[in-house]
Length: 206
Image (cartoon, rainbow, N blue to C red):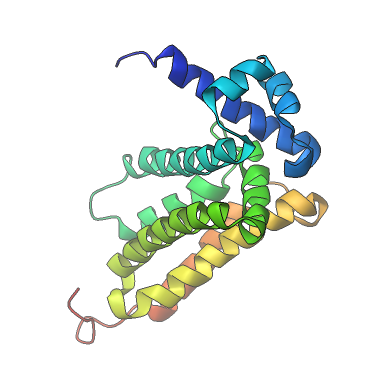
């Protein structure tokens, strides 16, 4: 696998700096100087690689989405080809599970991004693009269990639960028992899928 270029590595370093700075000071307080400090670089290097702070944030949106999708791919690769329910659980785990690849900073960052999506049209476009793609992915996973007709509302409900846990864990962490999010949403998913699963004679052709 080729090594990333110096430019790519620097950009990733700066994006990670924004994530760290936002965790400490929020987006408004994450000035270019603070991002540079968190990244261990000079402010001049930050300006060299990015036009402004918003461009770094937009890059962070794509980076966080890619990290969650990679966690799903890793989990899904360990499942049998016909384990449709396992893939729904793997999706939930990819976003909410604790463990060696848990991404606590990413959760807090995603909540900040969702808030900025309300304020900044450019961020809203990037945020909606990521959310739409992830929701469509979850809908396809759910459809493999219950059929296409019933998949959309179930997927939307599960995705909303995931996003709700993001907000709670970032804004009021004491309200969420540690390590409970993934297990709770997976149990919700199991109940919803059981209730929606059609009998073989009624199942629509997907």
